[in-house]
Length: 152
Image 1 (cartoon, one colour):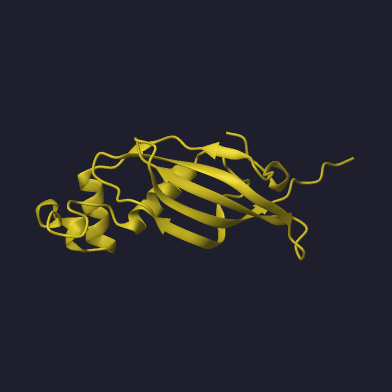
Image 2 (cartoon, rainbow, N blue to C red; image 1 turned 45 degrees about the horizontal axis):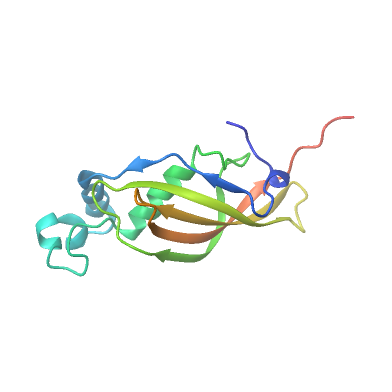
């Protein structure tokens, strides 16, 4: 995997992650610890809820997307260091058996005004299921290192 620097993140550049499949056990385990609501915990009880069946927590979907981004080709030197999220939308539920991937597009890249060794990028990240349906979308701001100066 090639580490990328600020100079490599040009607006319009896109990245696609590998995919992963979400299981019922994954959904219930995450919900048990972090979002214990019936539509995330109990497949039978979930049928009588807003979701009409078991659905992953939105926060689980965020965590899964982060997992997909780590180790993807969008790999800034120094790691994925978040500086905030401007927008976050959950567009449809993630269900047991869904296979997710994330597509990212660089929207902006700029040098830091106060730190010459880093900059900020803004990227739109869309998480899609196996049917190419978007399940989540967010715009994130990341701190990225600039390319080290080469000795002359």
